[in-house]
Length: 236
Image 1 (spheres, rainbow, N blue to C red):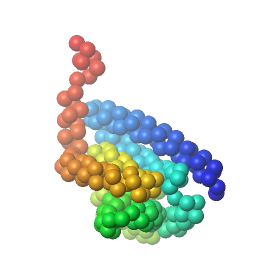
Image 2: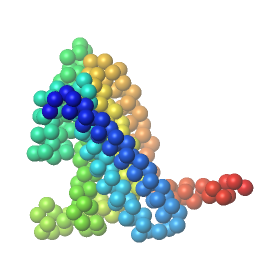
Image 3: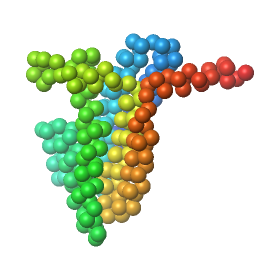
């Protein structure tokens, strides 16, 4: 890969991220309609589809981020890709954060970076890695009951997670991942300036959102949808 091909990949993945986000919005509208109708089968099918779309969005976004112009060197990009291919999504993101914070550590008074690295790893584990486990089960036909790695017995924990999966949870994944992406992208693109300036604001907004949405439920969402007037009612 050279710098020109890096830019080609970056532009392509930027377009892919935008298009996948449009799909997310369409699915979300369809889920809202199904919730208002009380169509539980459609809600379940669309929610699991939205979970698959989330993981596609994460993968495209990760590729976009690591190919950011004036960010990682070509050698660093290859390092990240190799780890991602051989060890999975978690190690790929961790390597991305590790290389980014190494760049940011060149700035004076950056002794808080180890804590930032730990916090980013925690967020990546909870909002990127764990959803990817559910996505893998859904993608391999384990729609309701999840099996263990060897496909020799049920994975009760993941089965329970599949049962609890709803549009509120998946929508939260998208929102949190947007914040994580913004943080990591500024870490890669401007490790000595923008990242140090914007990290605390971004992480504060993210933590506020997580606390605010902690008790959000599907039932609350349904009640709000039913309270909204239909277009015909609103025009009277």
